[in-house]
Length: 71
Image (cartoon, rainbow, N blue to C red; front, side, top):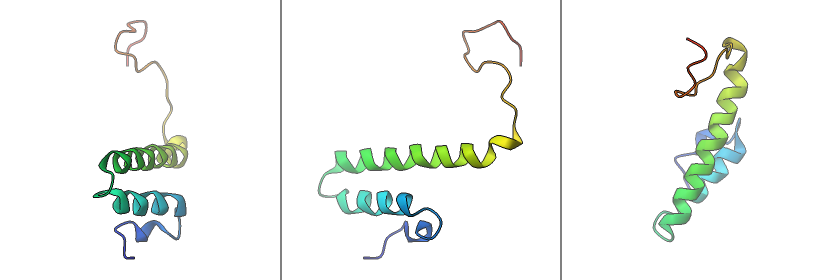
């Protein structure tokens, strides 16, 4: 079956598999589809963090209630 996520198959097969499964579930079980898309998004964020982490230094706290440091 042709999938919108086929372009991910070579480098990120797990993402492609999750995306294809989400497409399959879209009309059968929309709630499960949303869960799979959420899992895909979480995995994608992890890949981006691992790839881009060396470019940025995370100094300080991103908590808006923590006034102990200024950005």
